Image (cartoon, rainbow, N blue to C red; front, top):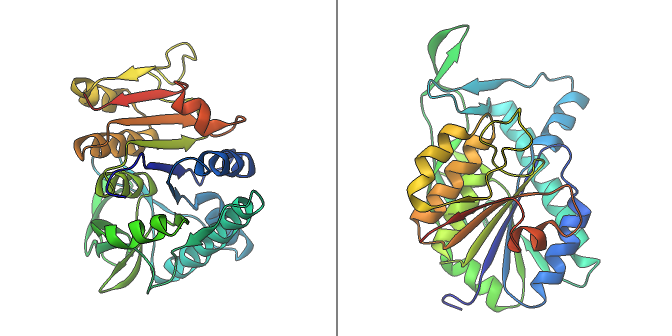
Length: 271
Protein backbone atom coordinates (compact mmCIF):
# COMPACT_ATOMS: atom_id res chain seq x y z
CA UNK A 1 0.00 0.00 0.00
CA UNK A 2 2.56 2.55 -1.14
CA UNK A 3 -0.07 5.14 -2.03
CA UNK A 4 -3.51 3.63 -2.36
CA UNK A 5 -6.06 6.39 -1.79
CA UNK A 6 -5.08 6.84 1.86
CA UNK A 7 -7.17 9.29 3.87
CA UNK A 8 -5.98 10.87 7.12
CA UNK A 9 -8.63 12.39 9.39
CA UNK A 10 -7.83 14.71 12.29
CA UNK A 11 -10.61 14.77 14.90
CA UNK A 12 -10.39 17.99 16.87
CA UNK A 13 -10.27 17.65 20.63
CA UNK A 14 -12.24 20.78 21.53
CA UNK A 15 -15.78 21.13 22.81
CA UNK A 16 -18.58 20.84 20.27
CA UNK A 17 -17.20 18.32 17.81
CA UNK A 18 -19.63 15.37 17.50
CA UNK A 19 -17.26 12.45 17.98
CA UNK A 20 -19.81 9.59 17.69
CA UNK A 21 -21.20 10.90 14.37
CA UNK A 22 -17.70 11.66 13.11
CA UNK A 23 -16.60 8.11 13.93
CA UNK A 24 -19.71 6.65 12.28
CA UNK A 25 -18.83 8.56 9.11
CA UNK A 26 -15.20 7.43 9.29
CA UNK A 27 -16.40 3.84 9.69
CA UNK A 28 -18.43 4.07 6.49
CA UNK A 29 -15.48 5.50 4.58
CA UNK A 30 -13.05 2.92 6.04
CA UNK A 31 -15.05 0.16 4.35
CA UNK A 32 -13.84 1.36 0.96
CA UNK A 33 -10.46 3.03 1.53
CA UNK A 34 -7.60 2.99 4.08
CA UNK A 35 -8.02 5.56 6.86
CA UNK A 36 -5.74 6.83 9.62
CA UNK A 37 -7.23 8.84 12.50
CA UNK A 38 -5.34 11.46 14.52
CA UNK A 39 -7.23 13.03 17.42
CA UNK A 40 -7.00 15.90 19.86
CA UNK A 41 -7.54 15.82 23.63
CA UNK A 42 -8.17 19.40 24.78
CA UNK A 43 -11.76 18.95 26.04
CA UNK A 44 -10.87 15.77 27.94
CA UNK A 45 -7.78 17.48 29.36
CA UNK A 46 -9.86 20.44 30.55
CA UNK A 47 -12.34 18.09 32.20
CA UNK A 48 -9.65 16.05 33.96
CA UNK A 49 -7.82 19.16 35.16
CA UNK A 50 -11.08 20.61 36.48
CA UNK A 51 -11.86 17.37 38.32
CA UNK A 52 -8.42 17.54 39.93
CA UNK A 53 -8.70 21.24 40.76
CA UNK A 54 -5.83 22.18 38.45
CA UNK A 55 -6.04 25.42 36.48
CA UNK A 56 -5.34 25.29 32.76
CA UNK A 57 -2.44 27.51 31.71
CA UNK A 58 -1.68 28.45 28.12
CA UNK A 59 1.60 29.65 26.67
CA UNK A 60 1.60 32.17 23.84
CA UNK A 61 4.68 32.45 21.68
CA UNK A 62 5.94 35.84 20.45
CA UNK A 63 4.50 34.93 17.01
CA UNK A 64 1.03 34.45 18.49
CA UNK A 65 0.72 30.63 18.60
CA UNK A 66 -0.80 29.31 21.82
CA UNK A 67 -0.28 25.91 23.44
CA UNK A 68 -1.06 24.26 26.76
CA UNK A 69 1.63 24.61 29.42
CA UNK A 70 2.67 20.98 29.93
CA UNK A 71 4.76 20.72 33.07
CA UNK A 72 5.54 17.19 34.38
CA UNK A 73 2.26 16.87 36.29
CA UNK A 74 0.19 18.12 33.36
CA UNK A 75 2.11 15.78 31.04
CA UNK A 76 0.90 12.81 33.09
CA UNK A 77 -2.70 14.05 32.87
CA UNK A 78 -2.26 14.64 29.15
CA UNK A 79 -1.12 11.03 28.62
CA UNK A 80 -4.11 9.71 30.59
CA UNK A 81 -6.51 11.95 28.65
CA UNK A 82 -5.01 10.92 25.31
CA UNK A 83 -5.43 7.23 26.12
CA UNK A 84 -9.03 7.76 27.28
CA UNK A 85 -10.05 9.60 24.10
CA UNK A 86 -8.23 7.01 22.00
CA UNK A 87 -10.16 4.18 23.64
CA UNK A 88 -13.48 5.99 23.07
CA UNK A 89 -12.75 6.39 19.34
CA UNK A 90 -11.83 2.72 19.01
CA UNK A 91 -15.10 1.73 20.72
CA UNK A 92 -17.17 4.00 18.48
CA UNK A 93 -15.52 2.54 15.37
CA UNK A 94 -16.07 -0.98 16.71
CA UNK A 95 -19.82 -0.41 16.92
CA UNK A 96 -19.73 -0.17 13.11
CA UNK A 97 -17.56 -3.28 12.78
CA UNK A 98 -14.35 -1.40 12.05
CA UNK A 99 -11.21 -2.86 13.58
CA UNK A 100 -9.10 -0.02 14.93
CA UNK A 101 -5.85 -0.05 16.87
CA UNK A 102 -4.75 2.62 19.31
CA UNK A 103 -1.11 3.64 19.29
CA UNK A 104 -0.79 5.30 22.68
CA UNK A 105 1.83 3.43 24.72
CA UNK A 106 5.54 4.13 24.55
CA UNK A 107 6.33 0.98 22.59
CA UNK A 108 3.63 1.69 19.97
CA UNK A 109 3.77 5.49 19.48
CA UNK A 110 4.65 6.08 15.82
CA UNK A 111 5.61 9.75 16.00
CA UNK A 112 9.06 10.71 17.28
CA UNK A 113 9.78 14.13 18.67
CA UNK A 114 12.21 16.38 20.46
CA UNK A 115 11.31 18.24 23.62
CA UNK A 116 11.54 21.98 23.46
CA UNK A 117 14.11 22.56 26.17
CA UNK A 118 13.46 26.29 26.32
CA UNK A 119 10.20 27.88 25.21
CA UNK A 120 9.85 31.59 24.62
CA UNK A 121 6.45 32.75 25.86
CA UNK A 122 4.85 36.14 26.38
CA UNK A 123 3.88 36.49 30.06
CA UNK A 124 2.37 39.78 31.28
CA UNK A 125 3.68 41.51 28.19
CA UNK A 126 7.25 40.27 28.55
CA UNK A 127 9.03 37.37 26.84
CA UNK A 128 10.05 34.71 29.33
CA UNK A 129 11.92 31.40 28.95
CA UNK A 130 10.00 28.29 30.08
CA UNK A 131 12.22 25.25 30.75
CA UNK A 132 9.94 22.61 32.33
CA UNK A 133 7.45 22.17 29.47
CA UNK A 134 6.96 18.71 27.97
CA UNK A 135 5.67 19.72 24.57
CA UNK A 136 7.74 19.00 21.51
CA UNK A 137 8.39 19.28 17.81
CA UNK A 138 7.89 16.36 15.43
CA UNK A 139 11.07 14.80 14.08
CA UNK A 140 9.85 11.60 12.34
CA UNK A 141 6.88 9.32 11.65
CA UNK A 142 7.17 5.53 11.61
CA UNK A 143 5.71 4.96 8.16
CA UNK A 144 6.31 1.20 8.07
CA UNK A 145 4.40 0.66 11.31
CA UNK A 146 1.38 2.56 10.00
CA UNK A 147 1.45 0.78 6.64
CA UNK A 148 1.65 -2.58 8.39
CA UNK A 149 -1.48 -1.74 10.38
CA UNK A 150 -3.30 -0.54 7.27
CA UNK A 151 -2.28 -3.60 5.27
CA UNK A 152 -3.62 -5.78 8.09
CA UNK A 153 -7.03 -4.14 7.76
CA UNK A 154 -6.85 -1.87 10.79
CA UNK A 155 -7.63 1.82 11.22
CA UNK A 156 -4.69 3.24 13.23
CA UNK A 157 -5.83 5.79 15.84
CA UNK A 158 -3.10 8.20 16.96
CA UNK A 159 -3.08 10.68 19.84
CA UNK A 160 -1.21 14.01 19.61
CA UNK A 161 1.74 12.37 21.28
CA UNK A 162 5.39 11.78 20.40
CA UNK A 163 8.05 9.56 21.91
CA UNK A 164 11.39 11.17 22.76
CA UNK A 165 14.47 10.66 24.90
CA UNK A 166 12.61 12.70 27.53
CA UNK A 167 9.58 10.39 27.46
CA UNK A 168 6.16 11.07 25.98
CA UNK A 169 5.52 14.57 24.67
CA UNK A 170 2.46 16.68 23.99
CA UNK A 171 2.53 17.70 20.30
CA UNK A 172 0.15 19.69 18.14
CA UNK A 173 -2.51 17.38 16.67
CA UNK A 174 -3.06 19.34 13.48
CA UNK A 175 0.64 19.34 12.65
CA UNK A 176 0.86 15.67 13.67
CA UNK A 177 -1.89 14.80 11.19
CA UNK A 178 -0.04 16.75 8.50
CA UNK A 179 3.21 14.90 9.22
CA UNK A 180 1.42 11.53 9.12
CA UNK A 181 -0.37 12.39 5.86
CA UNK A 182 2.85 13.55 4.21
CA UNK A 183 4.83 10.50 5.37
CA UNK A 184 2.15 8.13 4.05
CA UNK A 185 1.82 10.00 0.74
CA UNK A 186 -1.87 10.29 1.58
CA UNK A 187 -4.21 11.57 -1.08
CA UNK A 188 -6.24 13.67 1.34
CA UNK A 189 -6.22 15.07 4.86
CA UNK A 190 -9.44 16.18 6.54
CA UNK A 191 -9.11 18.33 9.66
CA UNK A 192 -12.39 18.49 11.58
CA UNK A 193 -13.03 21.26 14.07
CA UNK A 194 -15.94 23.01 15.79
CA UNK A 195 -16.13 25.72 13.12
CA UNK A 196 -17.15 25.65 9.44
CA UNK A 197 -13.67 26.33 8.10
CA UNK A 198 -11.37 29.29 7.54
CA UNK A 199 -12.93 32.77 7.50
CA UNK A 200 -11.35 35.92 6.10
CA UNK A 201 -12.99 37.70 9.04
CA UNK A 202 -14.16 35.40 11.82
CA UNK A 203 -16.76 37.97 12.93
CA UNK A 204 -18.38 37.84 9.46
CA UNK A 205 -20.24 34.56 8.86
CA UNK A 206 -20.36 35.30 5.13
CA UNK A 207 -16.56 35.39 4.77
CA UNK A 208 -15.92 31.63 4.69
CA UNK A 209 -13.02 30.85 2.36
CA UNK A 210 -14.10 27.92 0.15
CA UNK A 211 -10.72 27.24 -1.46
CA UNK A 212 -7.06 28.12 -0.97
CA UNK A 213 -4.55 27.57 -3.75
CA UNK A 214 -0.91 26.79 -3.09
CA UNK A 215 0.15 30.37 -3.76
CA UNK A 216 -2.43 31.68 -1.26
CA UNK A 217 -1.06 29.78 1.76
CA UNK A 218 0.68 32.76 3.33
CA UNK A 219 -2.45 34.87 2.86
CA UNK A 220 -4.54 32.15 4.50
CA UNK A 221 -2.29 32.35 7.57
CA UNK A 222 -3.00 36.07 7.77
CA UNK A 223 -6.76 35.37 7.76
CA UNK A 224 -6.53 32.73 10.50
CA UNK A 225 -7.14 33.66 14.12
CA UNK A 226 -6.52 31.76 17.35
CA UNK A 227 -6.42 27.97 17.03
CA UNK A 228 -7.19 28.24 13.32
CA UNK A 229 -3.57 29.33 12.81
CA UNK A 230 -2.42 25.83 13.80
CA UNK A 231 -4.88 24.22 11.41
CA UNK A 232 -3.79 26.40 8.51
CA UNK A 233 -0.15 25.69 9.40
CA UNK A 234 -0.97 21.96 9.38
CA UNK A 235 -2.64 22.32 5.99
CA UNK A 236 0.39 24.19 4.66
CA UNK A 237 2.84 21.55 5.94
CA UNK A 238 0.74 18.74 4.46
CA UNK A 239 0.57 20.44 1.07
CA UNK A 240 4.31 21.11 1.12
CA UNK A 241 4.80 17.44 2.05
CA UNK A 242 3.00 16.26 -1.07
CA UNK A 243 -0.62 15.82 0.05
CA UNK A 244 -2.83 16.87 -2.84
CA UNK A 245 -5.86 18.11 -0.90
CA UNK A 246 -6.46 19.24 2.68
CA UNK A 247 -9.90 20.20 3.95
CA UNK A 248 -10.67 22.04 7.17
CA UNK A 249 -14.28 21.05 7.88
CA UNK A 250 -17.09 21.24 10.42
CA UNK A 251 -17.16 18.31 12.85
CA UNK A 252 -20.49 19.30 14.42
CA UNK A 253 -22.67 18.09 11.54
CA UNK A 254 -23.85 14.73 10.21
CA UNK A 255 -21.39 12.96 7.89
CA UNK A 256 -18.69 15.57 8.52
CA UNK A 257 -15.86 13.78 6.70
CA UNK A 258 -18.02 12.94 3.70
CA UNK A 259 -19.25 16.52 3.49
CA UNK A 260 -15.70 17.83 3.70
CA UNK A 261 -14.57 15.52 0.90
CA UNK A 262 -17.52 16.76 -1.16
CA UNK A 263 -16.45 20.38 -0.83
CA UNK A 264 -17.84 21.68 2.47
CA UNK A 265 -15.45 23.80 4.55
CA UNK A 266 -12.17 25.18 3.25
CA UNK A 267 -10.17 23.17 0.72
CA UNK A 268 -6.42 23.67 0.33
CA UNK A 269 -5.08 22.49 -3.02
CA UNK A 270 -1.60 21.26 -3.68
CA UNK A 271 -1.51 22.08 -7.38
